[in-house]
Amino acid sequence: MAPRDRTADDGLGRALGALAVGWFLTLGARFLPPAILPQIRATFGIGDATAGVAISAIWVGYGLMQFPAGALADRVDERTLLSLSLVLAGASLAAIAGAPAFGVFLVACVLFGLGTGLFGPPRGIALSNLFAPTPGRAFGITLAAGSVGSAALPFVASVLTDRIGWRLAVGLLVPAFLGVAAATLRYVPADTGSGSDDGDDAASLRRTLGRALTDRQVLTAVAALTLMLFTFQALTAFLPTYLIRAKGVGQGVAGALFGVLFVAGAAAQLAGGDAVDRYGTRAVMVAVAVATALSLAALPLVGGLVPVAAVVVLLATQMAVQPVMNSYIIEALPPAGTGTAWGFLRTAFFLLGATGSTVVGVLSERGLLDESFYLLAGVTAVAVLLFVLLPAES
Image 1 (tube, one colour):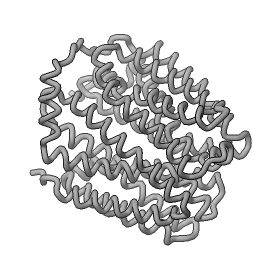
Image 2: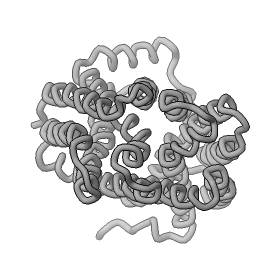
Image 3: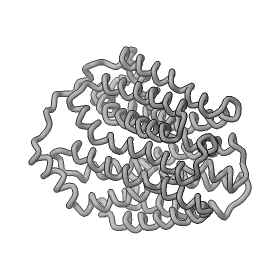
């Protein structure tokens, strides 16, 4: 007999709806600033380098929160952490929308990264516990909602910015975050089935991290993922700006192409999982990284809406990297203390990857935006070599 689909259960369905909409807002809002970056630059009178720092600040905050969020999820119920994350994200968006000066805006960006960084670990634990022993469908629905949010919210903000300004476009999301926080408190159970975990002692923690950080397979995989994340952060931070400035498209078209990137990326994630089952992680990741490097190098060379859109779709293949490599690294980690080691590594590669938007911003400031895509292609080529070095799976 097939297992019952627990996502259809009324109570669990409402909980899943709250989690999915929360991820829709969290992931979608994180890609909002790049879509309206030209207007933000004009408001504060800043250059591309400084704007790149602001985008990096969001991801730095997000990365810094990964390790403590995982530890908190072992000690505080998921419902409280998820609701707190949504409230903090909403409050920081209000601060972003109302920032009177760039310094306030930058601090608000860090706070937004910290707030949204609190959402991921308890979300995963809640889904795993609520929908055990078959949480795959619930995870699929939630992750799909995040991909839709990444496509929809930047596009809507781009369109609204032309009509009502970027501040109000951002501010409209604040009540949405607060409303979903209230729904999370109401529909997600306080006890999702997590057991209490007082954590390992410091010596055990050091041993776990030591084993992870001296494993060649783990280090190679993390290095490759970090380079791909660097490229992804840089690309998503400046793609709308680049399309407007270098390709001559309007704000709305740039926002639509930015949305296409995430829609195609969601398809790439689904296809990537199936391809890994068939061909293995190494072969698929090499193919994805090669396609990414070639498309990055091609973008400055093509003109016309259709060719540019085709390259954007090809660029989206890189979104298959994170879910595939996340699973690969987790399986390679020591069985004892996997969560702790994984949280530490997530913080490390998100912080390093976050520098991508700053680097491209500095190059753009010097009139080298085209050249920055060639640099990203080179970084991705190094990732190709690292993927080749991954142990082949039997």
